Amino acid sequence: MSLLEVQNLIVEFPGRRGTLRALDDVSFSIAAGEILGVVGESGAGKSLTGASIIGLLEPPGRVAGGQILLEGQRIDNLGHEQMRHIRGRRIGAIFQDPLTSLNPLYTVGQQLTETIRTHLPVSAAEARARAVQLLKDTGIPAAEQRIDHYPHQFSGGMRQRVVIALALAAEPQLIVADEPTTALDVSIQAQIIQLLKNICKTRGAAVMLITHDMGVIAETCDRVAVMYAGRVAEIGPVHEVINQPAHPYTAGLMASIPDMDSERERLNQIDGAMPRLNAIPRGCAFNPRCPQVFDRCRVERPDLMPAGATRAACWLHAADRKEAA
Image 1 (cartoon, one colour):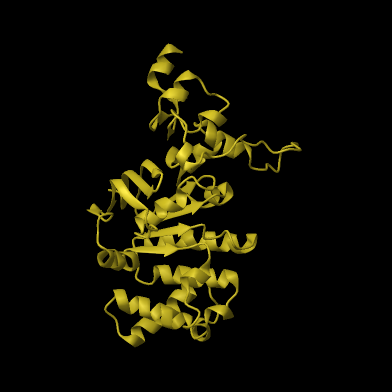
Image 2: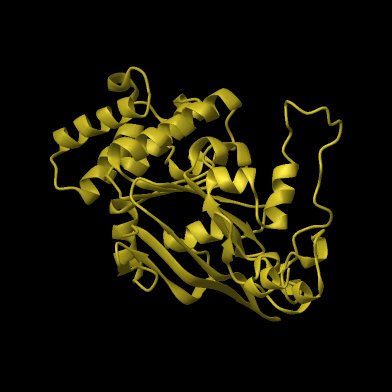
């Protein structure tokens, strides 16, 4: 059974000129101990999907359809207080900028012990011992001393480790990591990625890793969901999606990654830009930019369908088209 199930999720933003649909019929699941990568250009809906799961949608954004299930329990319709309890205890969150997650006025030890004691029935001494262990587990040297330091006394990479320790404080079953390595240099990125993988192995937690970096996805994830204009364009095992992309958008993303072995002087690019929410074209949202577009793509919108080892929302893989071929 999946730990997290997102079923036909729709997120809308009501405005003066009508309602904008930012996520449209998004579905996927994550099993315990699995890392699912969610990738796409800026504005694809990756972070919005994460915010919906952890109950931090910015008003006036709202879940207008579908449901989010954690271990079979629906969580998208819970009140603010119930969701706050689930957010620390069962779902941990790691954000792009560690300074938004850490309070500059309190030591990291105070912040960790408060989180632990909010969600777990332990004494102050037990909470502190646990906080020290979490800092050690996330690779912070001299944890016994560093626990009494303030966030500004840590480097960017070390701060991100503290944020991961904070996300793990109450032993959550699911971690939503939104661009956790973007602000870090490459060597630190690799360490943070390794840390996330170890957490999955040792704690059996599921991780939803949101990023625009296909290199991070290839290095970290078991499966990947490629998003475009608020929908899932392709989803499948990471190796298959990277090596044999079934959706033209995924193929475009893969072709735009530098290849150390090739002689190419110029990188491929996908012409055009992601459509604005108030101007999503009829049919497949990718059709104005797609090199393989045909008539059906312009009028009818495809759902995810089997495409080799993955599933892709693309009419190239329609059963009736294969039969005709």
